[in-house]
Length: 349
Image (cartoon, rainbow, N blue to C red; front, top):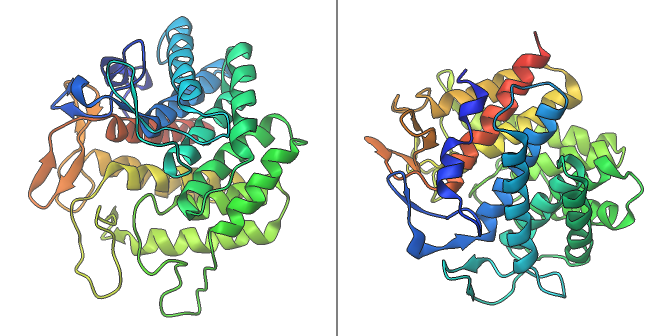
C-alpha cells in the first residue's frame, strides 16, 4: 500500500484559501468552475479522519498537524458560509466568492451534515468541533425527500452520536435516514429498494449499519449487512470489482458498464469498513482491499486510476482507458478508501 503521508498532496494542490476546487484539467484546478459543497464536505471528512487517526497513533502523520488544522478550518468555513438560517445549503460557489443557485436539501445538504458531524467527533481542534456542532444542529432539523441525501446526513448524525450518545436531534435524524432507505427484500427478483442502481449505492446499507450500531438496533445491522453483501456480490467479477457505471444499472443491461466512477468504490469502502468494524469478519476487510485495488488496476480493464506523479486520482474508468482529469471528488474517493485500507491493515497486524 502506498505511504499514507502521500495521500493529501493533490488535495493540497486543489485547495486555496476558500475551499477545494471541484474540477481539474489534468492535474490543474479549473479555477473558473469554482467550488461545491459536495466536495468540500468530502474533504472535511477526509481531513478529520486523518486527524483522528494520527492523534491515536494508528497511521503515520499525513501532513504537519498545523496544515491539517488549517485545511479543516478552511473547509468548515466554506460549509458555514453555504448554510442558510433554515438549515438548507447553497451548493455552488464561484471563484470570486459568489454563491450560485438556490438553497436546497439535496445531496449537498446531506454531505454537509456528514462533514460537519465528522468534524464534531474527529477534528483535532476543539473550536472546529464546537462550531461544526452548532451548524450540524441547525441543518439536522430539516429533512430531504431524497434517500441518498438522507443517508449522507445520517452518516453525519452517527458521527455526532459517536461524540455524544445523548444528542436527540442526531438520533432523530439517523432514525429517519434509516427509514428513508426503503425496503430491501432478498426474496424478490430485484431486492434493491430502488428500480435501478445509481451512484454511491453503498451509502444506503452504510447508513443502516450506522443506525443499527448507534441506536442499538440489531435488526438494522442485519438488514444493512444483507443489503451490502448483495451489492458487493453484484459488483464483483473474477476477483475484482466491476462497478455500477455513472449511468446506473438495472437487470438486463450489459456488464461491465462504463464510465465507472471512483465515488462508487469509495462508498463501498466506507460501508465495508463499517461492516468489518461491527463484525470483525475478514470478508469485509477483503472487500475494502478490493475497493483500494480498483484504484490501482484491479478493475475491468486493468488500468490504474491512481496518478503516481501527482498523488491524484483520475475521474473515471472508461472502456479503453481512463479520464485523465484529476478532480476533487475522485481524488477524495481515493484518499478515503486508502484511509480505510491502511487502518484495517494496521488493526489486523
